[in-house]
Image 1 (cartoon, rainbow, N blue to C red):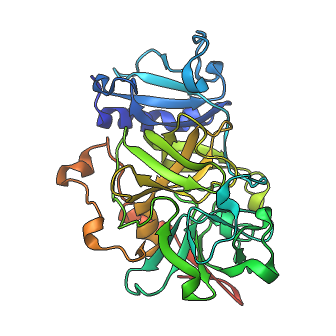
Image 2: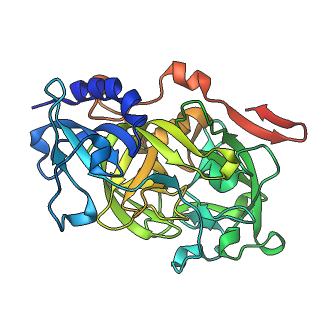
Length: 366
């Protein structure tokens, strides 16, 4: 039975060449057989067609979720599981018929927010660790920022795609973001918005209520839940972690398709990451602890591309608003070397990720 550390080493060795192949969208580590966790770990490859991964066999028709799980020739004793899926992309914002696209005051997590043209989801209400009375909205760069830049970015609730207007629905302005890079590796699609007034935000989450904190680590097989502007209330299971993925941003910021490293893929029985769900935050099934930030998905919406919310907290120096230290679950001492779990960003990577603030003269560092 393969352990996760060995699978991770093989994934690192294969990632560069696999992601250059046409039709390969991502490569990470997960379970060899999600239905039977005791069978151990595997390298998980997300592909458009089976031939893209060098597979000539045909899968059985009628496989649930339209995902195809195949066994390939092992690499150094590590099995490879192939998941057939359309290309991953950021979630645009067509009109929605869900209840979470309407106007709500004060704003809570799970509802529509955006710019004058687009809509995404307000993930959480967060506060700087040193200033707990300050409240900001956590969401994605491509939900809150003006074309990946420091240009003025008003935040509407509901977002522009849901009928929000500057005159009636202005709730704040984007105040911090991490710039997305076209030719460098990315780790998180993140931004925050500062409200016009503190009482416009309430530290609650739609349907599930209080979020007492966040987890610093989670593992393959963990079960999550979330509320998104489009998909509504959904549940999912962590299919793979440490996954290097290519995500299409189209014309946004002239980015095209860019690469993200060590992401999590969360799989649902039905669509869990649809256009307009960008920025929504996965919570633990029990305890309502924030776990991961959704920012992209597969063509059918059944696969959510997310990063650990701990990364956001590390980079921005924030915490869940009104959370207490007892609500933050720390990983076990030995879990730093256990590749079954996600891991915090190390100091070397943290030093490379800059939080930018809009100013009259352009961007400035946090």
